[in-house]
Length: 104
Image (tube, rainbow, N blue to C red):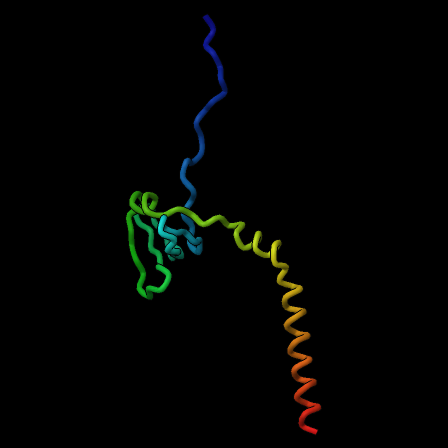
């Protein structure tokens, strides 16, 4: 009898890679920034806490999950920051023009 080939082969990592500079958060929403990673530990800084924290990798995976990298991109698509900058520049120029005419 021929073995059934389902082509379901496990491969790759089931967990996201931890890299310095990445932003992760707890289930409560507290964000952290990864400072450094070694095979056994993760060093990170919590939001609002100035000292670095160290955690074993296994505990880190249990306590934190990565923030989706597209969050800022989605915000930019919804709000169009270039238009906001143009509006702010126009407001500043109008204010400066108003101040010049008031002085004379």
